[in-house]
Length: 338
Ligand code: KG4
Image (cartoon, rainbow, N blue to C red):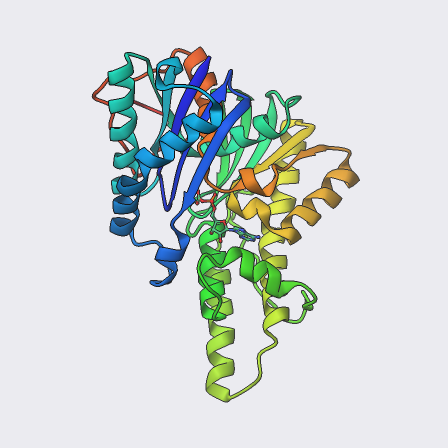
């Protein structure tokens, strides 16, 4: 089954052609990051306008690279929640038009479920059940993946997502947007214990997280140093921050896997590209004899191949939509609706 998929939930315009879920025939990602960098973060209206501008051309490229024509498409999958509402609406409208004109099914895909599916593409041997940590720019979640479409969220950030926190801390350190990668680079060689930073714990909710206090702590350190005219060890602050984030994510995920008896752990989302988090996960999984799955960097960030992959399993589960499909800025991953 050939699925054409569309992803426009934030500032990446992406389309892909996948066969039977896991085989990627083409995957095109147009990142708007440079346009938003000027403003220090994503400007929703600019994101929507750019999706409109590039979707058609990007789709032609994806079809050409896949070596297929429009007529060979069996279904159209689209990321319809959660995300920036204007940006999502562009992708949903485009996907509806394509599905209607070709007379093929339209498959709505929850964006975060798509991030989990990036692991199915990277690891053909991976099948549910397993435990997943999704760490992206907008979401931080621990989920029990019991089946391809049977997913239960067991913990989440109560405030900022980990990626958002990376971006804000990077900004206060004078790094460009999106700040996760530059901050990761800066932290190399820094002393990760030099700055004492908080690790929030939420009483009675061991798998929930909070990142806003950590963000504020870093902002205060930077501002206090500037006011007192003191030198800041930026590399060590970046390393101490990355260490704090990792120590909030990795032990929680391992504990959840232990409690649920899962011996396989999949990590997904843009922040899964972080070198400290990856290294800590590799060490923890080895120590506990768990099998770890982290997709290559190209599949960690937003892309449409992961939407096509999850779309295949949603389709097999009978989840298709009519032309009245809407986009939603928020939606729980374990309580999806059309
Ligand atoms: O999954 P993604 O591409 O978009 C969303 O769906 O949100 O994640 C983007 C996030 C950004 O916050 C970016 O700064 C962060 O992933 N990121 C990183 C790294 N590379 C990207 N954060 C930490 N370390 C990295 N190496």
